Length: 269
Image 1 (cartoon, rainbow, N blue to C red):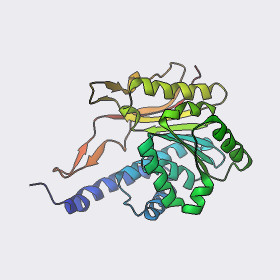
Image 2 (tube, one colour):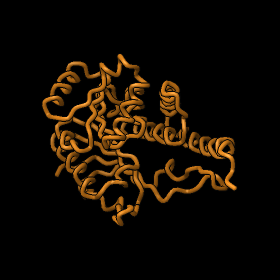
Image 3 (cartoon, rainbow, N blue to C red):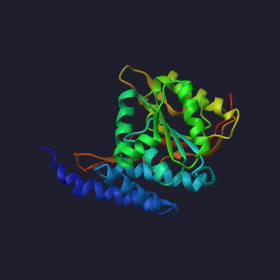
Image 4 (cartoon, one colour):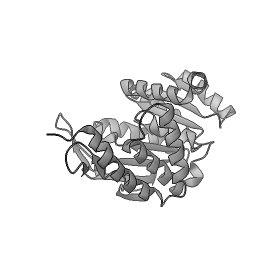
């Protein structure tokens, strides 16, 4: 018989939360990011679970590693957010003045809904922009240029990912979603980022499974992403906070298949 779900919360979650929070102590900004994450999830009426805590650790890591780039006048790109956790954290901690949020249609709707819960209707309407063409994008970019610390969100569907090339992004983030993409789709995102890197310095933080077999038999491999020898690697290792998860199965928390994170300065094409 499976353990009652309450035992997961009583036994598993606190053990892993403690373990992960201990990792956070190595980042000077962790407590501040953690506090914002608690405020965000409370406003959305959802639990501060391990997924959110991993996002908190990722933001804290980036603030430590490329601190000068995570400012209220920077533009960030989040490729494949979940419940808008990363986008919300970047704005709440003033790690970005504008977030470009790209996701699949249905998932993007969920992201936008949770942004609305966090920001409130009035602020959401003033700051969040769903665009689907270059004309709309240019209009929002001009608005951001005039008010770089307003905290805007530019959201578009993954099918419109080509719009990313026109965004003056300072850093991009992808966490456990490229592992779900067809390699050709991943290559398109890399091409977009490298196009941006032709005119500005661009950091890319990528955290994904080292290898995953899709339902159709396609295998995605982290090392096979279209990295270039010219990419300047700042960090590359197994991601410490993406190694375990909890479930109803004893011993309640278990190791993930290996997940790697890599932070690079992107080379242009």
